[in-house]
Length: 232
Image 1: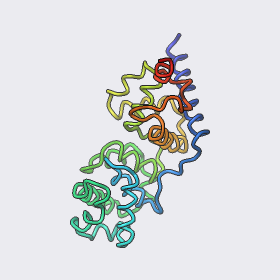
Image 2: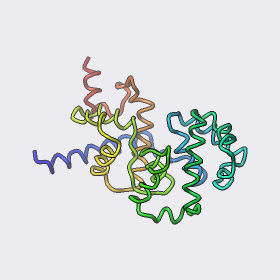
Image 3: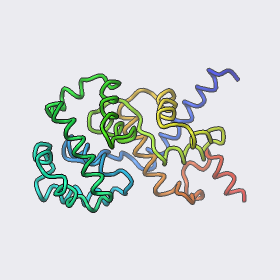
Image 4: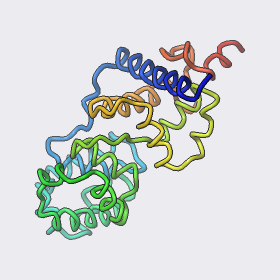
């Protein structure tokens, strides 16, 4: 089989997985948030924690009327930390939010202009902010600024390395290498990028867990690992 034919098979496989997940779970409406700024804050707060903890922290910020960029920028780091305790690592995350707010103030809080900036340069700027890694940067770009960039995470690595044994390398390569692999095989469509990442997270939390529930999995017919488990 030629390299070109194999690549087409991989593309078809990815789209088939996406369609199966979408048909099972439907539209995920990511990222939850009432404003661009709230989505950005949520992307930072969700580092190393579950979303239900982030929701509590965001609720606290709203109750104190601090979920506005200028007000949060003027608030002390100590006060900010006290309001996001539920999100975990609150002192670290308060510092990261402050670093991010410095960046936004330099941008004059002009989200419209940020959406018009080239994604490559904007992503580089985000990655220069202390505390903003590739996954957080891409979440901000995709969900808040509607930029076509694919977000990968630990769920992505686990699910796809299980689906196909030849993709075991996904567990070891860098974030950017895996991101480029997905972007090469997927149609360059904003909505698909948005939904696919959300669906991967949904399925991985409910079915393809650390200990997978293979019998209940809608992808079991396409999954190498499920075949091994079910045969046994």
